[in-house]
Image (cartoon, rainbow, N blue to C red; front, top):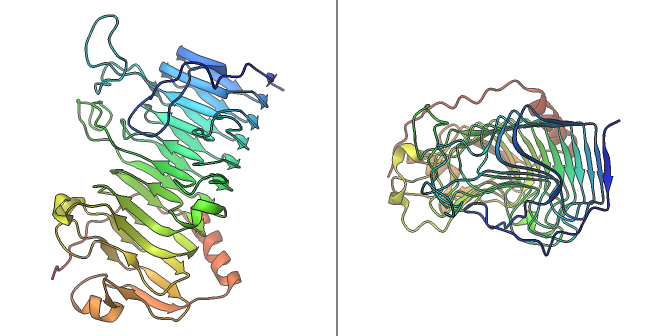
Length: 382
């Protein structure tokens, strides 16, 4: 076996910093810190009751791998990816700028086959995995449970291009009614070359697929399993099995260009929740949030809160809805009347099926080979 680490120094009084535009503050201290490395690997290791973070990958790192390792009861986060940006050149300037084109961040990180559980015993703003100003990460085949707030946190829209897939997550928000199993923020712009090879403020799409996410605690009944929060954009979410939670799709505060496709949502409260938009016309037509080809079993009889007009109008299409009554309303009218106005075309509604049927759907979607391609569709607005 690999390295076994336990009872490291307490870090909650160590210096912390806000790594990017999200809620979290982080400390660089950890049982293992990778900085200025290429192709570093942590494999088969056990981090048992470390009093702070397990592994921190800080600043310039390329092709780091954390695999087949166990993280039990850390005082902070299991794994942290933390990049550095700078607005100006020279010494003594803040490492909190918007320009990431100098490459001083983790890129091509692989986090695979790890077991991470019961995190954040002391530092509640922690998670299984926290990514802040890191890009092109692969997070796959991990099993994660037990967190006071969010489970996996993408603290910003820096670069993008991440692949989050084939993970199992459950039992988060044990001490909070905010955030969800997977949380994203995009409150601040960052300049990177990830999307096209040239500097751009737009992130490459982050794909999240073939995950099973169970929202079985406290606040997760109020939010989405994929909590794309505060301006989050370009999140492509497909072929996941989501059990319980507040909504199938969430977007707020100007979030746009998020796509949910070919997912199974089982016993969520409502289909969609779009909140805190100043004006639907603030989002361009081509950037509207889209929810297509999903199977959604809800505990109510209403789609929820889509944006019902304007250029930012939510695009729902070809979804299968299941409700207690076998009927559903959308935008304050029946589904049939809403479709008669040219909206939510090809979607259907029926009565809630048996548990066995829903579980079979979930098993099938996790085994399906549905790629991330999302077709563009036109719609008729009233």
